[in-house]
Length: 71
Image 1 (cartoon, rainbow, N blue to C red):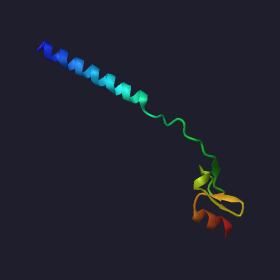
Image 2: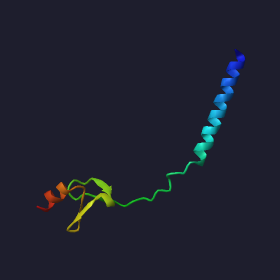
Image 3: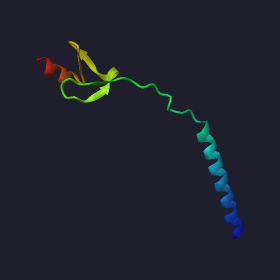
Image 4: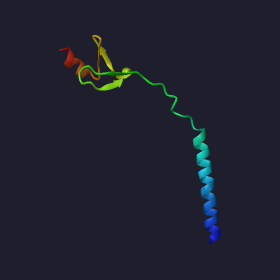
């Protein structure tokens, strides 16, 4: 019975060792490039510049806010 527990403990140790080795070699996402944030003229929400809508020198988060503000 004690041999069984000993084998399970060794198997768990090997598994954790392999798992930690794989995590150390994984590519890191920390190298992502930050994007400029802009503020919607209508509601004030902040969003990435690539997702915003530009109209008449103003920035909007959606076509509905653009239309509501420019009317």
